[in-house]
Length: 157
Image (cartoon, rainbow, N blue to C red; front, top):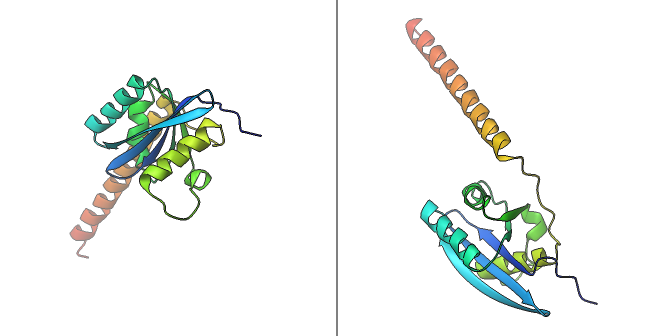
């Protein structure tokens, strides 16, 4: 018995701070071929990633939500791809000789069979509102801290 291929062309992305390692899995007549590439996480590199996915007719992408490093990748790809954001514990490769290339391939292999549970991602407008509210909270706290500091200095602390 073999698992059903849900995504015949999909990409697994292993996310790091300064780069991402990608692996496109293309399955045709039961045979899967792989294309791997490494991209910078700077905007230019992420745009190249988006272009590479388009050139390879890949619309379905799965990546693990590593810290906050996944956010710029998600932001650049969300308009052109269907992204499944996976919790790292659900895509962690079996221990052994782990490499970034193997991790990206593992994510692609799990994803092509639809074996990855995606995390909920609110719509862009909600995410932007959250960011704005977090920034406002940060500024309010900063202002309060500065007022307290000035007050202490004036009162001779």
